[in-house]
Length: 272
Image 1: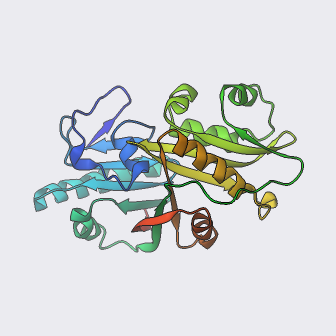
Image 2: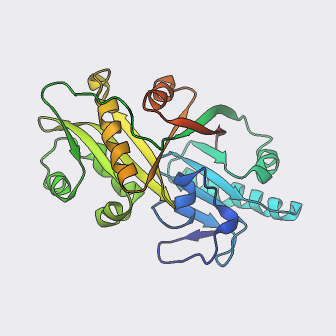
């Protein structure tokens, strides 16, 4: 497997993308930032992508021979896991984004103590029917040039809540601005909630959303999401909301906003 840098262009990624998985397919298609390995630069058959925003890896593509899967196993055990341990990783979390290799990938890890949970993906194609005001003192802001300048000039005491998410997903603010959307809510000099488009594949935007714990249950996430959705739809973009079964609040919020489930998958993890 070959690790791909920003300067290396893959010729044909048709075998290693999945339209239901913009977070990883966007990385494979080199539309957004992430770590990527492929078996061939010209026309890869299998790819491994790591997304900061998702916090996990994904396998995409397919092999046809046992020898190919044996080589992949050798790479994982003798190269990738060793590399991850050196960087401080304790666990390997992953999904399998291509149906044809489910059994083969799980066979590679059959001796691991694997834990799992379901992951759900939602998309919305219409503007939510109800708006929601936010409590007095809070301000809803789009992340534009003015706001970014405020951020880089240290006008907020917790700039990393937004800045790290954005710059771990995009190579620069200019690239983000050309391909994605973000909103946040501020209180005085603090960013208390963020909603960032962390990846794109074709016209689908993957969402990362967080509200600081002490500011939850005030309608902030809902109000921010409505603006985000409206902005996406006005610009021909489709937002995708992903969440795991251990986060029922996120699942319920997606339904409240009018998102419809498009896919179910499984997330796996084990200690390395």
